[in-house]
Image (tube, rainbow, N blue to C red):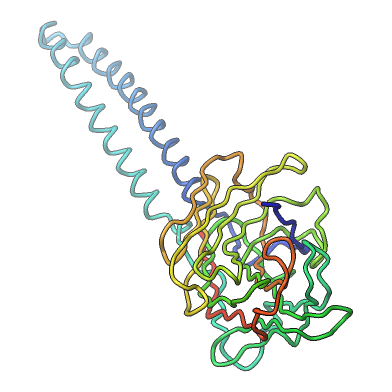
Length: 333
């Protein structure tokens, strides 16, 4: 399948995190270092105590050589071993109780209230020029009501296009590095309808091909073809253009357009794991394919037509709504 290059936007460093942070991978590396330190301390302790015992033995005129030798042989390993256990236990407790390892929610929107929160989200207002898509992204195709965000797609002439649709992102308002993102959403249906929930770096213009020095990475948490309602796709784009590639997987299940389902990705230095309804859909552990520690933004959109899903036809029902219940981001800090 011909893969797409999606638009992205400029990201500024998000100060919500603050302080020094550790991911599970960093915790594992820290624990390994501390384990090695335990053995080093054991050896140091062993030889120091051995020297002390030998000194005491050599200066004592009241103990026999045999008795002193037994004390050195028996007491030293036991003492050193107990010291090792004490040091390792202390380090283990310190690792487990470190306040910097809290897994916290750093971003959430349940889309309550009668308007889209402009402090968090940007509504696109531009014609798409990627993937041969047909839509104009219009701000009035994005709204929220009854605790739900709606991205509507419909057939109407606007901005030189025959279709309009909705796109929303966190440009310059929120980004994150490592953690997990989960959406709960109900997908639109119909030939030529292409909903997506995804992450991207921020150096590219909206709905315009991204300069090759900034793409990939791209994490497509969920994308789907409206004419295949029982199938969703998870994809990780990696590499450096033109030597880039992607890893992908299709999940077949219920009609994802009939009800709400959850779509999630976990991203850390050791893996990228995709989930559909809490079940692992795709796991990537090749570190050559895992995005570096670069801030990513959140994007939700519905494309109309294009290379992925083909163009609408007479069977496509309009309007179509991509409905999102919530989005939540967690990370370690």
